[in-house]
Length: 265
Figure 1 (cartoon, rainbow, N blue to C red):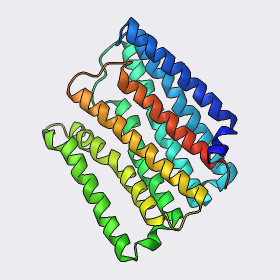
Figure 2 (cartoon, rainbow, N blue to C red):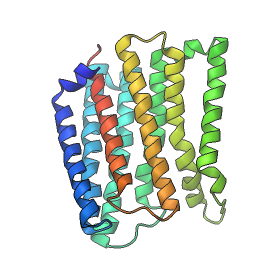
Figure 3 (tube, helix red, strand yellow):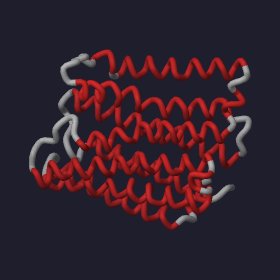
Figure 4 (cartoon, rainbow, N blue to C red):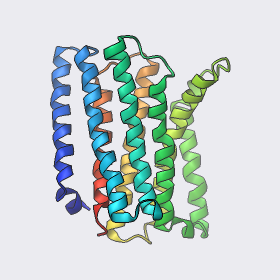
């Protein structure tokens, strides 16, 4: 898997973008956060996700048959999660740089950000199906893992987010996003972990490493969203801060994971 990533030219484009983002982020820590330059910084790091998304869709059709194969469908859906994030950043930038108003919540940006959840969830399920995890569900240990992993995930989501949410039924759209973000973000992590746990003895070495990498990519995305929801709830989030560097890192991790599927070995 590592050789596949390193021999791909797009890898170095992604890493160049990430190097620029990291250097720019360090600069922002000295000149001040929440400035117009910080808003442009947020727009720029979205290019990492956009680059990875376009390439992911390309290799889905070039290498895996596109929508005709299970892995091909997974490699289409994961890029759509990145495209949703990129779309959200465009709306975020419009409000902050062009309209110069506070971004409302919820807004069109949230439609883009939230799109990552169903895209990653269904994509993760496609990889679960392709890995043969469904066959392991027939065993006693497989059924136990199928119950244990979602149960732990629900407890974690409740403990970190849901217990402090005020259920205001007067604004159902806001309530949907308040619950949907923390609950939905952990579903792809659970599916990916479930996939690796049940199919680790069925997968070949290369595919096993790719699935394990996706588990890491989903989990880092979850941590990134957790950090944002925490800082937003505490009203400490600022454009160009450490949480935005986490987003840039999560896009980089997933983009490199998509590149890893460029061949079959």
